[in-house]
Amino acid sequence: MKILCLGSDGMLGSAVIPTLEAANHEVLNTDITLTAHIWLDVRDPKSLDVHMRSFKPDVVLHLAAETSLEVCEDKPDHAWTTNAIGTKNVALACRQRDVPMVYISSAGVFDGQSDQAYTEFDDPCPINVYGASKYAGEKFVRQLVPEHYIARAGWMMGGGPLKDKKFVGHITKQLAKNPGTIRAVCDKRGTPTYSKDFAVCLESLIQTGRYGTYHMVSPGNVSRYDVACAVVEMLGGDANVTPCSSAYFAADFPAPRPPSECMRNMVLELEGNQTMRGWKDALADYLRLWQ
Image: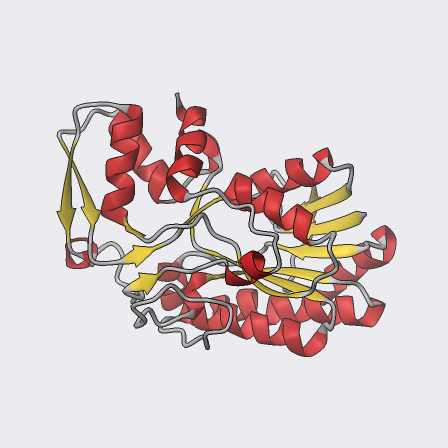
């Protein structure tokens, strides 16, 4: 297929693009970064229209987003413009040309009050600007594009030393400095998502024609503390991982966060397409990039 990828220069794109190309898809990579292959801003409908007309994609993969919870809280108009209106622009462009759309969403659309892992059949109820703007994007996609895939990811890990700005990358870099103590939050739980496995599962899914909403995570129910302990155990080192509450990091990360972002790949399981490895196996594979 010819796939137009929007926001290809981030952590997820670094896994998705090679996977798509290895499967012999023709991919046009676009982003707003200085290193982007082709510049395209989803907030600019004219820019989007130019590349939709010239490339004539079979599928549009929408990865572009503002993912920082703190930036979204501090600059809500920016968050809504990027995550909601930007997605609406993409959805309208796909609708006008009858092109299927793939939208990447987040566990952040849930409020985290459930003691069970969220499935695709649970109703979203976001508690922060990031989650609300991503959920608004979901609604635009459902309203405007009949043939769509919405794939929700959990706690992302991937990108390697160059692009991993998430939790696993942070802990790994701390460990390399041989700190005496690594503090990690134990009062929030979630499901890790390995970008490599996500990419493989997504590529397989978009060939099925089974449109809809999917959770796509590396199965598990863990805290940040659990993940940090696993990283230290797998990489070795003398660091002491100490559990702490979210309040310890409140000054640096003030945005409200759900107490649980655990998800289950229920639809993938029921349809026989669940290929995501468990979080520990996925983490072990990922950490080989750091050794």
